[in-house]
Image (cartoon, rainbow, N blue to C red; front, side, top):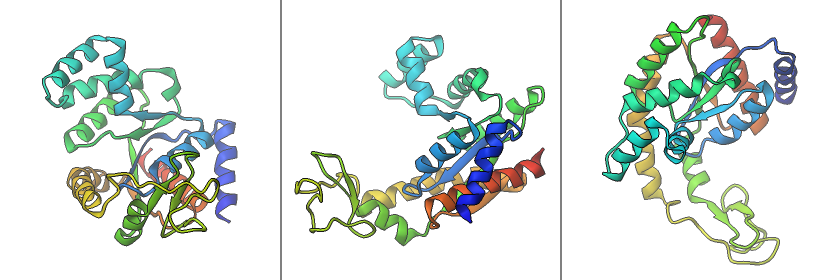
Length: 241
């Protein structure tokens, strides 16, 4: 059933009748935002807009905004909201954003969310942001992160809890001992969770108060999560438009 719903959304997206508009996909480390973003991009034909990519593009391209950002970064300072906002505004003027886009890493703060709302409201016919949060339980997230292992030779990926190799610690394909990323520890995960929650809580409450926020169950099969996210966007878009 979940696949059928996803296929329906995919067909509608190709017909050009669905305009998803700006979609903010939220979720703690390990919930699978990247996987879901790729599926939604393919279904609706919209780009993913990453502030990290935008920043790197401006810096490497030597734009005026990039030069200002590089000067700050070279001094070890954070790039301020107003500079990030200007870069995002430039990116949103490109034609591939006409139907919508998935926001990645922005808005990260309440100030950025308020700026984005004002910016979009000023654009003729601009749709507001709708936010969907993928929720996965703490224990499941911890297993997804700390259980990750990879083969340094063939790059195969395993999870000792959820998708273990046939022989403990060895790659199924070439028998190479599996490696673990140095930051895939419970201590690092807990710190990342604290950072995520402290940063996103005000953003979530902002969109919840605006009636443009919904949570979906991220522990469902991948196709079912995709279908749930897309259905949530369409529901929120109906209420927000």
